[in-house]
Image 1 (tube, one colour):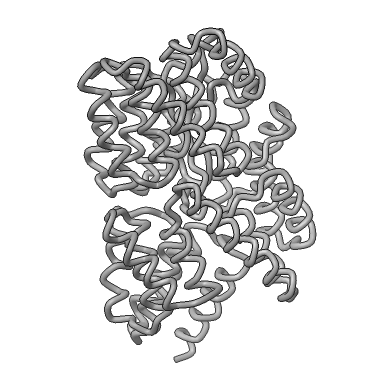
Image 2 (image 1 turned 90 degrees about the vertical axis):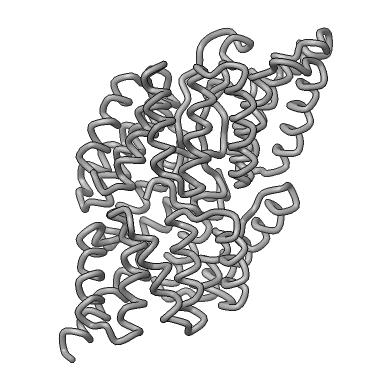
Length: 436
């Protein structure tokens, strides 16, 4: 899934018109692993982000009453957190966004939308939605705010409302932000042909290097998950040609190498990616590569770093319960996994929250309860191998062999190489069922 949430300490993508203050239009869109990534408000042109931040800081020292520039700086800090994996930018973003609202208490839609993006980045999606309500009350046709709203609604599991918001944004201002969000919604509903069609529209709209790389990575991810490894690698190569430092493209090439059975090359590429951007999703993936290679010590080191990163994120206001629920269910403490999953389910009922709770219950040996949530996680028809793998393993644990066989075969059909650890488990479990 494009918006996988251990993926997802870093999600991204919305715009508040920051290009005005930065000297030109920006063309934002979602980022990582899943699709519409609620973590960032806008790229504020990611290719020149450091220069943009420095220019805004200089400007605001002489023009401290400029509410619009304070809002733009807040958006830039949210984006900087996404690009660097450093959550300490989030308190900075909140401070300058609130300063913007202090300087302009009325009709400050830029700051309100910036606060929505910040809360989405921190995974407080209910708060993000509330901020978009306030912003849209000022300007109901702000496509950037509708993009943020789409992401919040997706993460809250309100998919029909998210589709309406994304369609409305697309009717107002079609482009990369709307094409990628609509693509992700199509993917969530299992329509991969439509998801790819929309991404190809986004590719034709991409002009600046970061946007070209971003869309190419999404196309590569979609191809890779369908087992089209050559096509995927071509997209990742194109992303790196556009932007040689693009970390998601490096990660994509690592996953292609892993799918081809070259775990050594996969590890080398992912190590380079983690050095540039120590995102928890990538750290976990690197740990799993080490584990698949039999290097338990190196895997344990990576998992320790994941826990440290989660503590740092929490200290800076980021909710990590969903990410930690899956991680601890796979690699740690089932009781901790269940606590985190229950906390997340109390906040939102998305398919990924359902998946996390089902998997945590399974890790805790409570498979009858788990099946209800695993079924909820697959209710949209999403062709996500991990969601299907979790459901199939729960069905197998309950002795529902016919159901488990179908679900695990669907998982491997959706992505035959979805994990160097779990795909072999799926195949072994199928073998056991077939022999019984």
